[in-house]
Image (cartoon, rainbow, N blue to C red; front, side):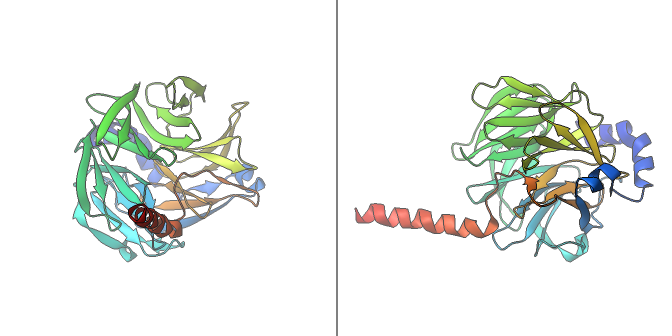
Amino acid sequence: MQIKNWVARILAISAIGLAANANAGLTLTAAGTGQGFTLSTFASGIPSVSGVVGPLGIGFTPGGGVMVVGYTGEIRVFATDTDNQTWASATAGPTNYGYGNPAGLAQVGGKFYLAEQAGNKIDEVSATGAFIRTVVGVGGATGLVADAATGKLYVSGLNGTQGIYQIDPVANTAVLKIAGSFDGLSISGNTLYAENLGVGEIQGFNLTTNAQVYASGYIAGADGVAIGTGSLANSLFINTNYGELWEQDITTHVLTLLANGGSRGDFVQVDPNGSLLITQTDSIMRLTAASGGGFETSVPEPGTLALVGLAIAGLGLRRRKN
């Protein structure tokens, strides 16, 4: 999400928001179709804050469902990861986090974590979206991504102290890693990609040294970002507030418009099935690549979460026997 609070968002985007909402919806361009991409609707009818900011964080439950964070304060869980569903068909979580507050969602170690923007904190939540505990405070916590290799979280903080923080959900600590104002986040190996609000571009940072290693150049309204794999391994995919989806070649920086005509785009999330879920004002779209291409994710397959738990339990039994 690009603006520090929902009032500022509405003022800043009202002119383009009205035009965007009048459009038919995100549609592939000739270039997108030519590359073999397909676009479908995962879910529609999702409520938004004043018709501007709608669904944000997305997660995947052990039972094969999809958890979606609504900026109106609600988290809902779709029982299946299939297309053409509606917000009303999903199960509402037992906790309402407040209007214009819940934002990014990430999962690591079989647990779910929620960024509360207005609440200025990171929470642990259940697979139904219920509040479990507060992990740590971060001013204006917005974008959230997990590094499965280290078990750490990274959050973009807006309002008050700004920057990207590394969160240890076990030690309950937050360490400022990169100063600045950032939004959508994604991790590929040892590189953290983040949308820098100050300059309007996607930047890459080395997670060990914090040094900047990539700059996309200006992309109007850039927000959520994902990294390609396979035949798309050298590409970034960028969702924008202007209803567009761009592909950028990481080496040449050449931009290709894959889809346009959408409403206000925010975060994106790679589905364990290899597709890319793209948030819009009141819906979530699914981008599927041609055979041989996909999108990188650090989220384990939902079916493996239970196996991880069993493996840990087995390790504990072996230790006790020894």
